Amino acid sequence: MTDVAATGISVLLVDDHPIVRQGYRRVLESQGDLHVVAEADNAADAYGAFKTHDPDVVVMDISMPGASGLEAIRNIRARSPRARVLVFTMHNEAVLVKAAFSAGASGFVTKSSAPSAVVNAIRGVARGERAMSDDIAHILAEDSLSPTGSALDQLGEREIEILRQFAGGATTEQIATHLNLSMKTVQNYHYLIKTKTGARTDAQLVRLAAACGLTRI
Amino acid sequence: MTDVAATGISVLLVDDHPIVRQGYRRVLESQGDLHVVAEADNAADAYGAFKTHDPDVVVMDISMPGASGLEAIRNIRARSPRARVLVFTMHNEAVLVKAAFSAGASGFVTKSSAPSAVVNAIRGVARGERAMSDDIAHILAEDSLSPTGSALDQLGEREIEILRQFAGGATTEQIATHLNLSMKTVQNYHYLIKTKTGARTDAQLVRLAAACGLTRI
DNA sequence: TCCGGCTTGGGAAATTTGCCCGAGCTGCCA
DNA sequence: TGGCAGCTCGGGCAAATTTCCCAAGCCGGA
Image 1 (cartoon, rainbow over the protein chains, first blue to last red):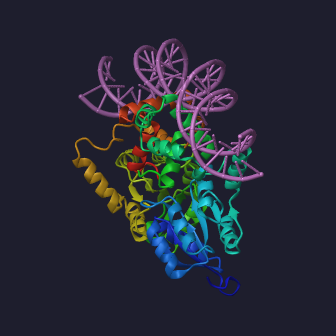
Image 2 (image 1 turned 45 degrees about the horizontal axis):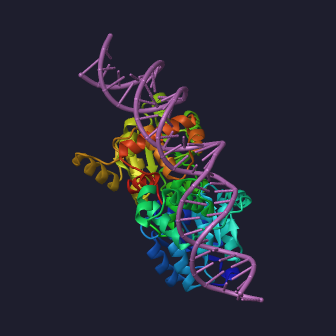
Image 3 (image 1 turned 180 degrees about the horizontal axis):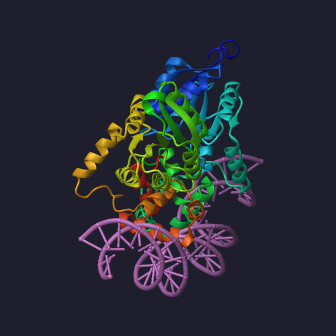
């Protein structure tokens, strides 16, 4: 971690699209105080680059092939709790946002944001603040009005198991048979899981399960 | 349409993410011969900007909210058959590629391509050539060899679009609003897609869409 | 011109969801 | 020892969705 005030902010860019990365790099470096010291196009390389370069801020798109971006965040934070990770993605689902923060992200900015909002978020997390774009704040605010918990870690063992089978493609009947439950119970769990995670559709549930490594796609 | 050899290539950039657009602009303009004369963040504005600026090449991400990017391609080509549209997206599913070319695209490049491949593709379509990135050529080649084809080959353009939004986590109501359809129609498509693909649950549908590159998790 | 396929939706029965409830069990804490 | 809290399991029932079947308009090809 370098002295921010003296040398600017060092940034590790993680995105699986090369030209997108190069575009970001140019936008960020035109700011003067932001320096892209490394790039990575997957979660494993991101962790390696973090160890090598120890950047002030990791700017990461969490939707990457292979290992989950959330897993990468956890790895980075486990190694270096002072690490600042700014999630930068096109997704804006409340479950993903909460999952990212509970994985240890310092900020969450969507690609719909104005460039100035993105660079300000980078400066914010470099100062140790929490940062998020307006649309994300709006989504979280609305979500918080319905008093349902945060992400996957609030689920019980049984709920996790049912979510895993569901996200894996099993029907309600298959889950009920396999776990020796009534279909009604499985349906109730299904509903409970959705309310607990804040997922509004089954698809969001599958995406959440995949993002948390519960199922492979 | 300007004289390419004398003044370089004028480009209209269409992508719904502002910072992504700004990144592309900087990458392209650093090439010397490429000039971004306008930007748009949706299909309707793209058509308007095309009419106003008459660029040599339109570089377009077809996955945008609202009207389909394919529709924008058709509009542009209907107005000006000599128009060159280079599709530039993260999706690499054969059905999408074929749909784009049959809508009138001159090229198809994925965001996984190297920046040099992208700028070369722009120069290629400006010369009137057909251009595609290596991964796209590979996918089309494999697709043409397999008798059964991808599971998504049997889906029409509208079905693909609805599946993409559904797998991305959108509710029936959101899809209906985005595409200006009744919820009933969206539900019917949902059912039709399931029967066509053989998916028995929504989760299987999401997994299929992810496996085919229609959505990222 | 006719056929076939895509797109858009209506209708109606079957099924699931959303949300309420209670009951049994376990562990924990005073 | 009692009591509370949380998980597990399911019933009930209105509301919503899914599942099919059908039809009409449009468009491109034979």
